[in-house]
Length: 288
Image (cartoon, rainbow, N blue to C red):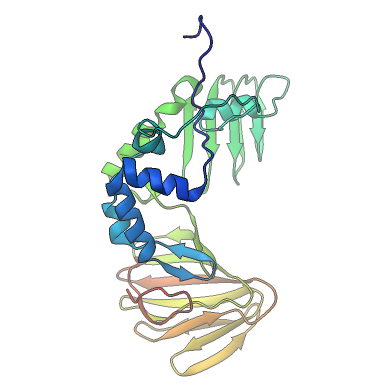
């Protein structure tokens, strides 16, 4: 095919009107279409985010658009496109697209490289120092560090599979977890304690909630927070703190115009995210 020419390669970019695609999905993969519709019809909305109905979504068969529709439809056409496109879907492509130093290294973040050639070195926070290495991929994040030979970097799927087998949270969860009201990140985790940094957007409010197995200490480090503990509600500013005993209803809100940040120290026999009873929530989340 390469020597003869006259063939096009499927780059995986598709252009269609939504209704045309839905019609073809119903014709070529009716089971996928059925469960997709059920998941959307049972959706919930919090602010500007749509949450699909989880049971229908989980029951939907897995299939890519290529196999489910494009290989079966009679309404397709292929057109050439010379756009200099790169999916950046692999470490090799990210390295190839990066700006290289005089030794062919791509350096991102707080990185020092000596006697090093052809490496992709990425720091998300801590200093990464590389000495006497070549053709490697090193990626540092808050929760994990990847070190791989560039020729084996695409085998990271085997590492992910081992994380899944071991039930490790790194497979699915980043250190910083987005929420409809802002985000939180874990700073330290021990046997009976956990420390979090929590950011609440201006005007946002967490659910009115209670925990069965843990107590919490909150310290405001930036902004202004409205804190409800039991029947009492107070305004706390930077350097002020409060204590939420186990089993007491509480809520955190940001009444200000700047982001609110607090440090939360949890202590108790169980610190999982599912230890929460919601009584009231602005984002439509059910009690857990």
